[in-house]
Length: 166
Image 1 (cartoon, rainbow, N blue to C red):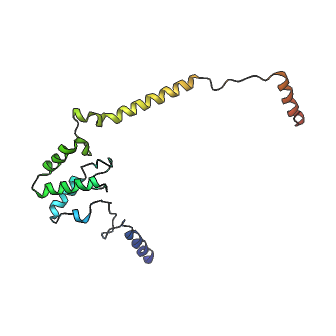
Image 2: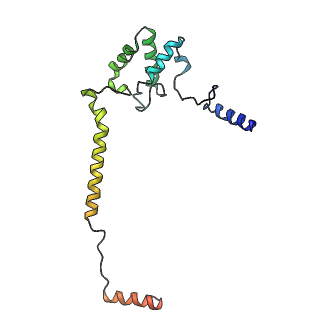
Image 3: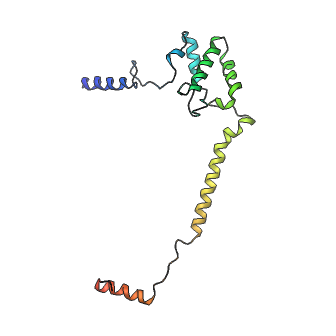
């Protein structure tokens, strides 16, 4: 039993799934050369990186993305923090360059209204389209049936009686 655990641990740790503490490790794209020497600044940078969206990937934070632009944003954020900017000023600097879209949770403002309401509008349009489709298909008859003529009825009777096709 102990041997199986050791083999499993080695396999998982070789894949990078298990850390030395024994738990799963999240995948991060931060390269070793980006990590700050000051641990407190690095913690702040990691926390802020989780709030910023990769403009290329669009559904990942810059901390998770391997895109070159995400790397540039990580480096820029760390430079701003090293120069003495507060968390808010560092994020505001990046937002000023890339707009509110770079935030994973953009503020609810008139210029971000489409980001907040757009998915709801698309869902409503899809629902209305589906309802209309179902309504029109239910109103149509399923199929138009044609009646068999006398000759065809005789052929069916012969097939059923004899089992032979004329």
